[in-house]
Length: 336
Image 1: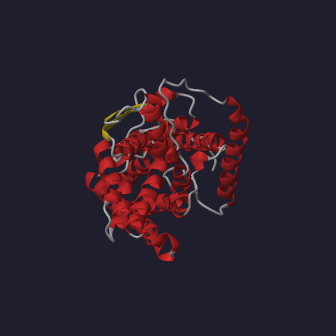
Image 2 (image 1 turned 120 degrees about the vertical axis):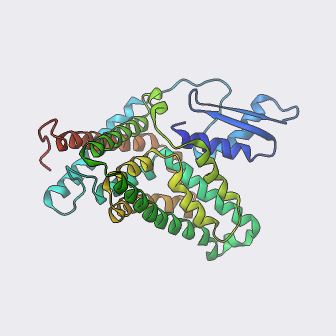
């Protein structure tokens, strides 16, 4: 388990099982406690049945607490891959092809890249699981839809709802920031918060410090549960509503961008920051929703997450240094 998104997902999936009356997951000790009527089944049989429900989302259950195993050999591949990724975009920046990194602000390109990284993090598994579960509920109403192109309509509406809502709600947050008139000090503080959140997210993706997962800030869990519950409502507009609801899911990447959007003080800038972030998540989420792809199921996923973690840490450090330079605390360090 990596954050409150994992808690929301595991509790929601297990609570939908007929035998279970209550399920409560704990990020503190990475466990889930279930209460229900299981007859004369052994605890091993119960574990196996519950694992069937959670396994598609990348989780496994065990009766005894498992020790955290760190596969250090992954870094032999992850570090060169991450450094290559970082060097490539710095090169594009220096050539003036794209404006991905800016010493004074998070650009649209940076927001797009963070969206790309977020879409393959384990936190975003909850969004992929959400749209897949929603599609399954629609298919139950008419099983024959699985053979028709029209079956893709819920997924298409979901992605449209997600992109439009991120644009509009991002603008609302930006406009809200203008009413507060943050000023230099307020902008500096929020920029530091964004940098710290990104550093925590990156460290969590490395999966070498389990205690860091508890530091990750999230929205109240009940908001995520409400959003996740929308998938069970079979209505034409349900996919759109689920897409809108993902704006409020407990994803640290989304929240770091929302915090930064406050500093823009502009409806249009805030809209575009959140829109490009959502656009960055679109390719992988589309694969998740239109197929059975699950990056967390792949054997190479550990290397992939560690590579992504290093890239996110780079952005966190860069934003931290940029904030300190912008406030005049330290002299400029980077020349790009």
